[in-house]
Image (cartoon, rainbow, N blue to C red):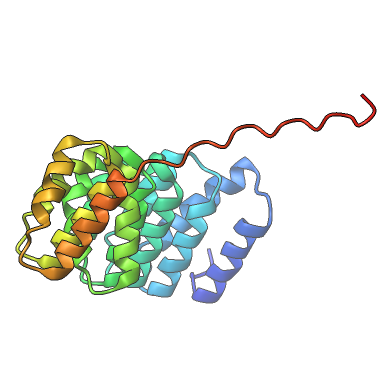
Length: 236
């Protein structure tokens, strides 16, 4: 077979994305792409991940291939793999622990995309909650927003770690945890008690967040609108 180059990989990726492949071609493409994951050129490896993400093979086979890329030396390849795993939603559960490790990656974009992938698993990603909460202290707003969404999708299983986060030495982390607790578990009595205790926090921003969270919890939901009356026929 011709030596893989970025140009050849572009052609292969284009073929996979734009044209239907029969079973034998899919099998061959999977082998070629799997071999490409060990190529010395990171651009080739990244393109292989792009193609693997859309290759019509079983979810398990796709996830196992993408897992290899999550440990790649190139941050671009790791990030691409995390995004592709996120697209698999709950089918990516076998990658749970590797994605949790990715939350401590040296590259911020890899950490962010691992958080996004975990969020798309929903409550099944609950073991990731403590590591996600630690990321609420990240400097980038975009990263914190993605982490917050992931924790909301995990839901009730994130409440206990968030309650612990309210005791963090970091004022910023305490404030973010208070806000998320109100949104995830507004009817939880333990959450209500913790939010009230945070009203005396030494940090003004934390106190403000706790106050806003309590207002959110204590504001009754809007009353449902009565159904519109049917307009009577004028001739009746």
